[in-house]
Length: 400
Image (cartoon, rainbow, N blue to C red; front, side, top):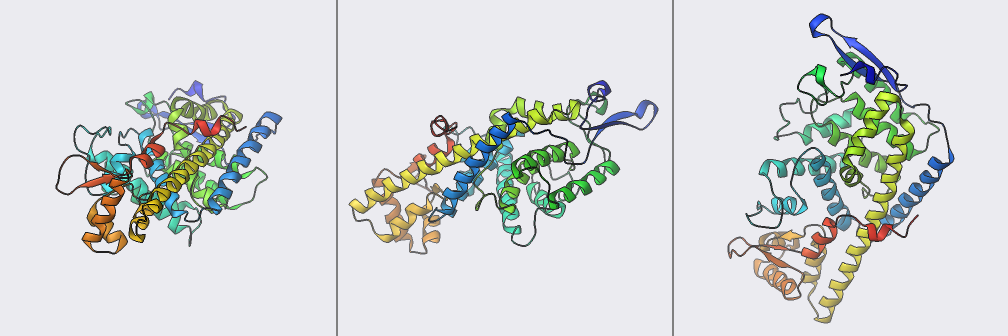
C-alpha cells in the first residue's frame, strides 16, 4: 500500500506494522461519526431519499400479503450482491436451484457453476436468518458473526473461519501486502475499531438515519473484519438496519443493484474516504442510491401487483377453482415450480396440483422449462421478467 496515498487523510491514520523487510503500511479509520458539515445540496438529496423510503414504507405497510413481495426482492438482492463479488448466477438460476434443478445447457440464463449458485443461496439463507434473528437480537457484532457463518458455510469461503473475526492481516488488491490498494487495520486496531463501531450502533447521534447508514457501511468495509465475505456482510448490514431501525416495515430496500450498476464509483468512493476523507462525496453517492433503489422497488412492486391483478382477472373469467388461485399467489414467492412442489405447497393430491398447473399453462401464466417430460419444471416468465429488468427507470424518471 502506498503510504503517500493515505498520509493526508482526515478519515484516519496510516501506521507502519513490522520492521525491516516484513514491514508494511495499514490504515486505521477514525471512530464514527466523521465531521461532516451540513450543506444545502446534501440536505436536498437527503430530503428526496427520505421521501422515497417513506413512500416505500407506506406501500409495504399496505400490501395485503407482504411475504409475496419480500421473497423475490430478497433473492434479487442475493444475486446482485454476490455478483459484485464475482459470481455469474442470475435470478433464474437461483429459482431453478431452489426448485431442485440446476439450469440446463442452452437455456437463456447465464449459468456459470453450481458453486456460484450455492454462494447466492447462502446469501438468501444468511439474510433470512438475520431478519428472523432481529426478533430477539438487534444488529450487533454477535449477529454479524452468526450471519457470516451461514454466508460461508460449505462454499468457497469456508476456509475463511466462518463466523469469526479475522486473527491475521488481510488486504485488498495486489498479489502481496506491499502491492495492495488498501490494507485495513491490524488485528488489535481492528478489534478496537469494532468496539467503537458497535457503540455507534447503539448510541443516538444527531445525523439522520440514512446518513448514519452511509457512515456505517464505509466503516465496516474499512475495518474489513473477516477473512472473506466483508462486502456481502457490509451490504447485508444495510438491509438489516433499515428494518431494525424501523425505517421500513419489511426488507424491501436493497442497494446492491445500485452498487453493482455503479461498481467502479462504489469502490472509488469508499477508497477516497480512506485516502482523503471524502465523506461528503460518498454520502451524496449513497443517498442517490437510496433514492434510486426505493423508486425502483416501488416501480417493481406496482408492476407485480398489476400482473397479479391481470392474472386474477383471467382466472376469474374462466371460474378457476380456489386451489388454482392459491397457486397463482405462490408463484410470486416461487416463480419456478414443479407439480410435486405445488402439491406440497397447496396440501392437495398430485392430481389436483397437476390440474392447477395445467390451468395456469392454459392461461399463458406458466410455461414449461425445457422439453423433458420427466421431472418437469414450470416458470412464470412475466414475474422473472419484471424482477430481471435492468432497472425501474420508467418508474423513476418522473420522480424528483
